[in-house]
Length: 138
Image (cartoon, rainbow, N blue to C red; front, side):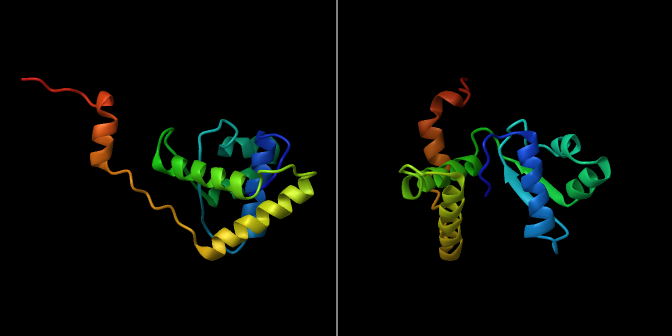
């Protein structure tokens, strides 16, 4: 998790470079699951670092983009909502405090191995999203 002023290509490239070089230097492959924000793409690396360095970083990544309305994205949004309620629902004076607070919250969640109990079934979807399914008439 990183706290930045904006969500630029350079910000994304720095975070990914840190993942590869500092957080997981001994891993051959790092799997990233993320949304489709236009800054989050291996091409962003090439705009920030030298081509050989960008290629070295990109080759270690296995990127999976979440569908716009998919379960992965919903789970990420659920987690961000919980983070906002449990950790960020107050005035935070500066980025250093924000980083410390979010890191503490993240470490606790990872230690407790909190999981999402996904209960929306296919049968539920067919009822709730009936208007999206085609109608076959004989």
